[in-house]
Amino acid sequence: MPDLEKVCLDILNGKPVNLPESELEQLLSFAQEHGVIPLLHHQLQSTLSPINAPNQLMDRLHTQATLEAASELARNHELKQVLEALANEGIQPILMKGTPLAYLLYPNPTLRPRCDTDLLAPFADRENTIHILTELGYLFPNPKISHQSACIKKENNGFIHQLDVHWKISNRPYFANILLYEELIKNTISVPKLGPHAHTLALADALLFACLHRAAHTARSDSNRLIWLYDIHLLCEALTPNELEHFLDQASFFRVTTLCLDALEQTLLRFHTKLPDAALGQLSKPGIQPEPTACYLQGYPNQFKCNLEALPTIMDKLAYIGETLFPRQGYMLSKYKTHNRFLLPLLYLYRFIAGCKKSISRKKK
Image 1 (cartoon, rainbow, N blue to C red):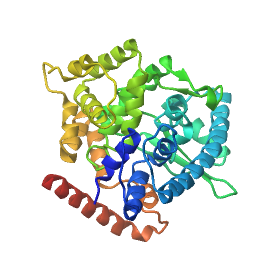
Image 2: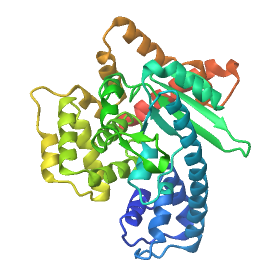
Image 3: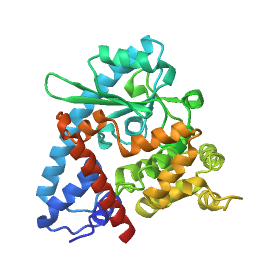
């Protein structure tokens, strides 16, 4: 069986690839999981690409890329309406993650697939934001999970829009107060192709956020998801020297240099990102005291301990333990795609057993 990550990376980096047609399904499944099918299609159809791909592969990639392009048209139109409705009520959300990067850094926004659009909004406007989105036809299956509210809207043609409205940048207690809306809004940049009300994180802040977002997933198997690392790759290469210096200063100030260094090293390993050696050297300098967040690279139990210690009161800690062990019912029903509340005891048991298996598997690795 081929190293599927290596095959994807060789294609994305323009290297020759020899892939038997019998292994195409495995490659497509891997590429879908890692969010890089449109990028693979873009690279393979480039006249500069030295790769001769099987016709079956090109046909499948073309089909997926076409579907993504159609989805992007629908998302673009809907998001402009959402942002205008919020702006009319004096609410200015900050676009995060894949959507703004798709329009600012990728050659074409259809090359950055995503299942939802992430917005950061001030908590003071929470009730009004939810009201406005409800008026636009959005449903909130579970109005609040920690510091975010997810909602969906189904079009008559069956297309589903998904928004993830965040009140803080992360549900992880240690990260939640690192990048605050009140500070981020001062340095936002516009995303013209998404309309006059579209604003996103400054590139240095976006890079720091991308590193933290990856770190939040290191206890799972998807922390090195290729599309997330490709986001980091493009951000690194888009930064000016001053922006890079700001990123390094922020990483040091918030004591997350270890997490940022790991994210950048994993990105460089795969995409040969152009980044000054001095930047990596600055991130790798040992501090006077170990960074608390370094434990994020040491498995879920250590992450849980770090998050627990970041909470200020006993009540906050108890609430976090309760929410971790027994997430809200709406979240469980949504996650496991059922409306049958009688299944909840079994779902909680399944979740517990699955978590134990993952923990044992990670220890073996």
